[in-house]
Amino acid sequence: MTDFYYPTRNIVGREPVWQRRRLSNIHRIDLLEHPLPIRDYLRRPLIRRGRWLIRAYDIDLGNFRQFYECGFRHCFREPLLRIGERDDNGKLRPVGDHYAATVADRRMMAMVLHRLKSKDGLFVYADDLRVVRAC
Image (cartoon, rainbow, N blue to C red):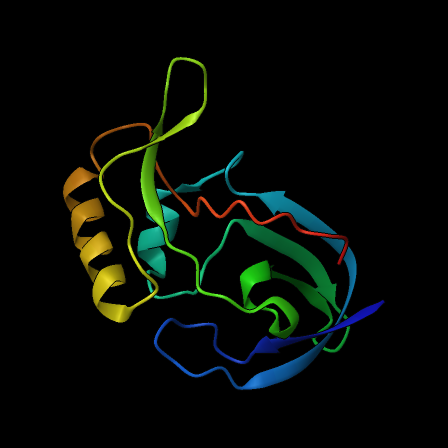
């Protein structure tokens, strides 16, 4: 079991209110390797997202939850997001510019993605190159 502090609502543009989370069975997913499908981003565009998605069992809630590593208090930051597509070698290639962790930018990104959602092969990712140590 590991204790972390995570915002009660991990939303861009909101000052975090920290809540203690007691987590076990922690699994880390690199969203550069497994980027977010457009439909997942559009479902909740204002979530503070980063490169590393953490799936873990929340002991106090009694179920599995997802957390973005950039939201944990000990490494809090607000990474930029990009729209990307896979090249012929399977690497993510950016499409257009980045979007900041602001409400205005994330809404703009959602508008762009609504226009592009019929195009296959597009994803959302944070090209944050920060290395994550064991949680």
